[in-house]
Image: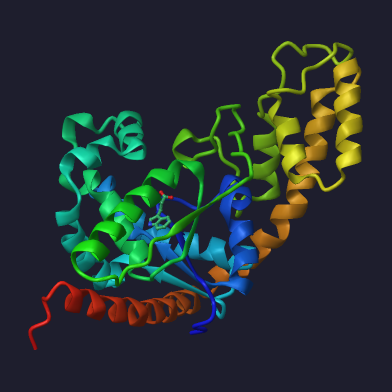
Length: 334
Ligand code: TRP
């Protein structure tokens, strides 16, 4: 480990393969950051189980899928330690001790948790495990003394809660933990193909990094455009038109996109033409990822070996933190 480098920790819940929203929102950034920082990527299976405890097979299977996505986009296991959360018992240990530092009322006020309880209809059966997952996430971050946590806006309350735990721990016991900073993605969130504000597996509106050309074509052809643009000769709207949102995000030729927007707004440019163009643009991006993913998936044992090595590296680091924590908390007996 390079001690001079600052530490980054970030990760995902393994609940499905990753999609273009992840690609623009976080994956591209991680590929860049791994050169400059010591990067850890956590595959948060313990967190995924908080609302999928009755579907362990799904969480299990998606560990491999998510890892394939990471490797296919260019996350390099020589630079980044990719590891599995449940294989780091220190994270569970830290979670237990941090539980004392957070009130139940504070957990209930966490905006991200509140939103999820509402969206996932959990209020009737809210488990202790789900309510306290931000504490477990604080353990993920602090076990690695992360300086920076690259996240989307929705994760800011988690970093805030982590910082509170760190300050309280360091004040009561000893200054062992590092207060993390959020590194908020500046890229606008990618809409789903249906025009909903967020691309997500659960909404069924995602284009995956492993999608075939046929799948991409089918999804783009269904894409939400301008519902009032009925005839090709009609003027069309660009705002809220998902095809143009994606061209802005993915077409490297900005001038060509501007010209298409102008023509579309004037009238005379049909949806099929812009969609065919978008299919080409997306295929150019996804094809090399899909091919790398297919190649890697032929040897799942090799991929699991990468995870095993990343997990061993992560465990070594977390073990050191745990030692310091035990000492600070006076729970080191022999
Ligand atoms: N909560 C994050 C998500 O839903 C996943 C995650 C778990 C995470 N532990 C983390 C993100 C630690 C950053 C740091 O996407």
